[in-house]
Image (cartoon, rainbow, N blue to C red):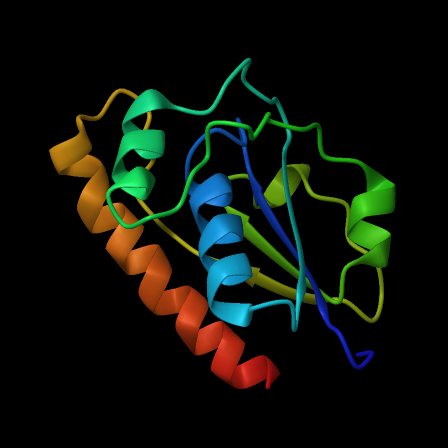
Length: 132
């Protein structure tokens, strides 16, 4: 990995888990990591309950737009973390792949999204410690 590792978070719609993970890693890494997120079938917008749960901890997702997963995004990443769509992600040699099994926040209330957010935060902080 380079001096500034690149991490790509991938979920199906890029509207929940991967958006939370990207925002949390970007926040905790404070510029030490290049962070991206994408989805194999992106939604039109970030899940409103996800956005609200993130706003509660001071992270604004209102300007985020779900993005389509591309082979190029995977190629430039040092670490690729999938969340429920591992089979849709292209595999390239030399990349570190992790699959985080997490509940999908789609259709859940903010109360139900908070524990998912908190679990992602725990995993992101562990990842950051591993990258450092």
